[in-house]
Length: 337
Image 1 (spheres, one colour):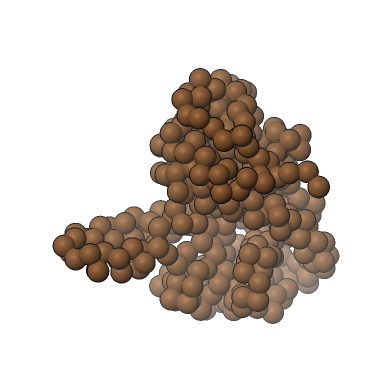
Image 2 (cartoon, one colour):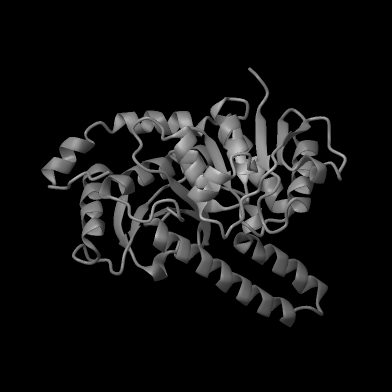
């Protein structure tokens, strides 16, 4: 079996390339049986001394967050994002991680890699802290207008991801909505509820916003528009509260240690990258504000996904749900995907 080779967008993120390179060096020193490929402007990356298991692929262009993703991919064909995705397509990389433009990474992944067989749309999975450990939310920004079938596939892919990384964990699935009643929500949400209830025994119904962190649901489904807002609001609220608490306990060393432990579940750098589920290749998106620790953890997450063949297992799960079309017709749900 060939060595795992993880690609990293050296030019993506607010703190690139310094924190990206330092995070890669940390990961490479910790995982000497894995190869790493930094993709970006070679002259900037060479300012650091790299371990033997890190190589550079030169890319002349970098896509900025404020650029229209599709247009940027067309005009910047030698961007670090496009180079990385192409290397995954050519099987020269086992996975690709970027803290750059989410829209560009998702668009490049769809255009170049396509979807896993049977998958209709991809979804970004993010982790959230709850009263009973971590929960996963899909989608956090890839698909703004999902159809009922997409929600069902999010549920299957998200469950597969959780089962592999956290075996034995109970997975209760909820659909984010404005009320618990089945009569609430938009028409696509109502139809998604019907389909999920008919196909999955562990679907527990609608979830209201105040239940997201309750710990009663291990997988929460929503459209990418709402999911991205939930994620950004949660991050800003956590940062606001933690900064307030930090200033209150600044004088106590004992309280500082307790604060660090308490703060861990709310720190995005602990969890690294968010996988794009459903893509025919392993691609992860790291936070735009990622420091070297966040990048290191994102790379560890990518290695874990490759080692556990998460995409292969998702494909098998998708194939087993061959009754979708018949169930949709029985429920009078139109598949417009």
